[in-house]
Length: 85
Image (cartoon, rainbow, N blue to C red; front, side):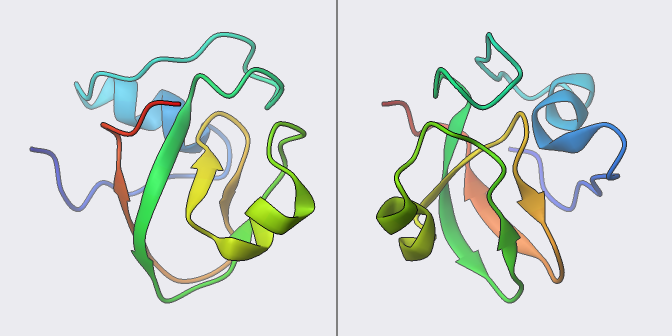
């Protein structure tokens, strides 16, 4: 299990995790299909939801995010890459 992986704003979560050897599923890379959705276990920061897949209500719940385009605006998060829709 990977832990403590730093994500840069340039590459985003899905690409960074893939390059670190974490199995990720993604397709559109635009936040439209939802294949890259990951579960948010905990966060101490604000999530910048940039996808169009989740509803505004789902985004507000901060339980899932599209790893291809969404990111943290601040803080850290623990995510579950095993979550699949």
